[in-house]
Amino acid sequence: MNKPAALDMTGQQVTSAHILVVDDNGINRKKMRMAVENLGHTADVAKNGLEALNALKSQSFDAVLLDILMPEMDGFDVLSEMKQHERMRDVPVIVISALDDETESVVKAIELGAEDFLPKSFDPVLLRARLGASLSKKRFRDQEREYFGRIERLTEAAEVLEGGRFNPESLDLDDLANKDDPLGRLAAVFRGMAAEIYERELKLKKMILTLQGSFLVLAVGLVWGLTPALSRMASGLGSNPLGLAIWVNALAAIFCLGIAAYRRKLPRLKRSEFMFYVYWAIIAGILQRMTTFVVTEHVEAAMLSLIVTLQGFMVFAFAAVTGMELASPRRLLGLFVGLAGVSLVLFTRFDLSDGAQNAWLLFAMALPLLFAVEALVLAGKRPEHVDIFASVGLMMALSTAMLAPWAYFSGDLMTLGPSIGRLEILVLLMGIVGASSLLLAFHLIATAGAVFYSQSAYAMTIAGVVWGMLLLNEELSPLAWIAFAIIIIGMYLVEPKSSDEELVIKRNFNSES
Image (cartoon, rainbow, N blue to C red; front, side, top):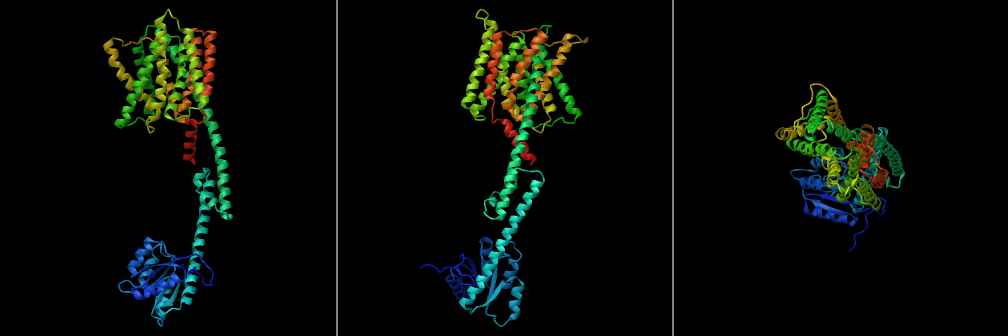
């Protein structure tokens, strides 16, 4: 048998309500429950005041029919408790009692927050009228509360916009904007305006960051490009790679740690953080440095700079394999074009009769691999709370400490001074160049990401070729220049459109917002 539809005080159909009936008398509970259900509502029952409060705490009710006279906790106590809890205070209560002639009890119940009063010998029509009126008031209050809540959220969103924060997610208006009413349309306007400004600001940030990144790419290339030329010049003055690496790293450590100390940024490291610097020292301070100094004794500076362009392709290849970057057909084509260019570079110097020279050219390819490992594996894990000068200085100091015993026992310690000659000046310049290139590189990685940093490889190449020509009178054959042009085309094709750069921009912009 279907229940009749719920009716309001005018007899019109309304949404079924959830009513709590509270009475210590079983017969009265059953009578009130049946009366409520005959009006089309659902009803739960409670035997006493404490049970009623527990039900109100655990469930949502639209109204309460509450007996006044109950043992231990009467209806007055229940009303008092309900008004002290935010969840219950707005639930309408109709008190029901046999105290028909006790006006004081009715007044007291009304003063405690009851909506209305019914005698236990109530007429069903009277119950329908008074329950309908209470439910109508509750629905109106709920609508009013929702309305003012939406007004408050719109006001908060306006304050967010006024504060210059335009990330649509920070407004939290999605649910309001989906409502088809004046406030919903206003929320949609707020969200749309914020999204438009946010996208415009994001594009501006991207443009600024790209310009900063491009400048840093050129700066990294210009500074690092000096390294092969200076190293080759130093090797011509009687230096050895191991001794040269110790002096260059030590000077770079003094330079960076001195600045960190002046700025009061010397770090206190945990064991895991210290081990990062040990690994970094091995990769950059020892393997990178030694590879550079050893190879430049046998390979021209300009040629080594061309080989360094492999770094960009290695970074992309690693990022594509690990899912950091999308391996689209265009980028894969760029990867193969770039590798073809590098292969052509090597071909211009390969001599079948000179196996040693060919071996050194192949060994030189370890250098871009080390750069790629540093950029992707180590650089991204540098403890961010440690000052960048302190980071580079600590790494250089550790690499010096690890190289020194090796040089001592092999007899490769190199003595400089006391007079200042060409070698001393070159070593000093190489120390400054080594520190500066690392500082610029890490600033670039922090600003635009590792994949964007990899694009500095071609800037290193251009600078290395130019420095080699200016300082060492080196020349590249026309075929080498053609190979270099092919490499640049490959780099252009590989260059990521959705790189670390955009992630860094959004993260920085959202943190500011």
